[in-house]
Amino acid sequence: MSIKHMITALMLISASLAATANTDLLVPGSRPNIVVIMVDDLDGGSLNDALAAGLLPGIQTVFAQNGLRFSNSFVTNSLCCPSRVTFLTGQYAHNHGVLDNLPPYGFDAFDDSSTLATWLQDSGYKTGMVGKYLNGYDSTKDVNNNGTIEDDEKKYVPPGWDYWNITVDPLTFLMWDYAMIEKPLDVTERIITKYPDDYQTDLVASKAVGFIEAVEAYDSSPFFLWVSTVAPHGESALRGTGTVRACGTPMGPLTFIRPAGRHIGFGDSLMKTQTAAFNESDISDKPLWLRQRAANPLSTELTDCLQDAYRRRIESLIAVDDLVKRVVVSLHNMGEQETVLMFLSDNGFLLGEHRLAKKLVVYEEAIRVPLFIRDLSAAHGDLIEDLVINNDMAPTLAALAGAVPGLNVDGRSILPRLEISPTGPWRQRLLVEHFPHGGNSDPMDGFYAAIREQGPSSQSPFLYVEHKGSTDPLAPWTGCTEDLCEFYKLAVDPMQLFSLHREPGWSAFLTGLSGVLGNMRDCVGDTCRMMEDADLQDLLTAQ
Image 1: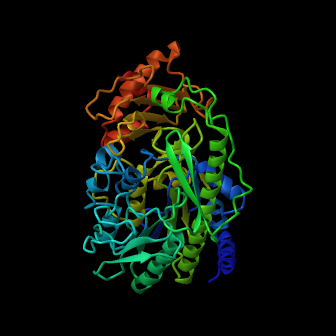
Image 2 (image 1 turned 30 degrees about the vertical axis):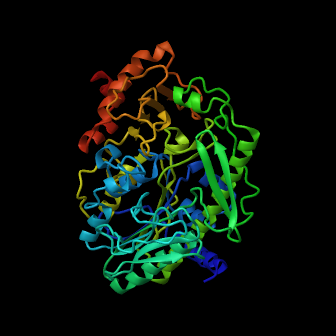
Image 3 (image 1 turned 60 degrees about the vertical axis):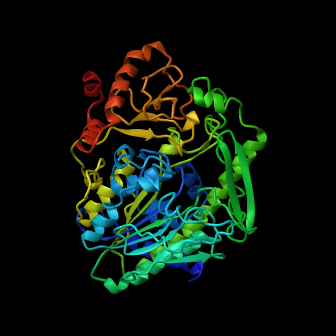
């Protein structure tokens, strides 16, 4: 089916669903099919720009217009591998133990014996995974300079997955000349296939549709499909099939590609909104590591390069939009309207804000992420303002499927908040945490922990951050010191331009917050939820 025909079919599907819009949202234990589409490094601002420009009609129709849109959705660790494991386990990184993208605390540290996949498979779901899994997946393979996989024996498929089509590191970020470990449905044999000519996002879409078509043979069983793209992460190419450019940022090079013939020119008219946070003029309020690494404002050449990177990232989403359209049309062709779809990102990204081009950090552009949920059998178009975090995704999908989590999860199902008149306590804050990255001694990649408060206290919303200034896990936390602390009143300073941690009037309040943060850093299960839900004044009084 051509893209033009897919768009027409999608419009007809949406028109028919609009007439069936109702106030019944998602029902716990209804056991629908579940399709999760996860993108890589997408901040909410970039997605909003692309939607407003009309570049993503599939995502606009399926999710933005007719789905549940969550305006306060955050990740608790803004790094790919820890965030993706949180999606699978419902746990903070300090509990699931995957703290990094690289050994020894990356993929190799993940105990994958109990995950969302095993919970749903044990409850009768057929499960499939397509695209990017976890950073470092199968990185023990010997891959030579030509991308040929020498060791053909290591074809690991984690427990819980019936269908497996996953890109292999270190080739995952190549849009051509990459490899996949593949296990078709109901086949035990695992094969490794090289794909020299298929643009990766398009192939991921084809493999996702292939799973939907394959599970039709098990029509009495619901299915769970996780589709994960590299886009809009900085794509790269092994061959000369696109224009490659690198921006030499203070935090290291940012490399991206404009793929030849795929979506050239679609984003040329877009310009990234240069807020006051972009190339921030005064960073004297920022922690020492940032003042040292980004001491000089970004040059005109670099800001132009970042603008280009921004446009190419949005262009890469056009292929994701095609993927959404293909998946939805396939679901309808297979008669699978009883399907819940989720669209989200593993973390956000900064492109020039606070003079940075990076994730990993605690600023809003990195931790606030898009989240949409759509019941394909109805149209809702509702805005959900409750504070939700990626810890909630696994218990939510388990509850929807009538499955029982096999772990002591830190998150909770958000389904009760989707009722017409939700009652009971709900989260007021979340813990944001980061751990040393790849053994790098750069203080930027050292420990930090933060409380992101949403409300409803008189000080809300705010962000309170403590940095260790060290990559040594045994180094002590020193509280809110002058060079290793940040505090932003987000209601009056949403762009986080003026840290108030040096203001004498806040000293006692920040001392109390330091004690609250110290308790949250080690929370587990019920304790996490209690500390997230409690009245802030009660927590401060208890210090």
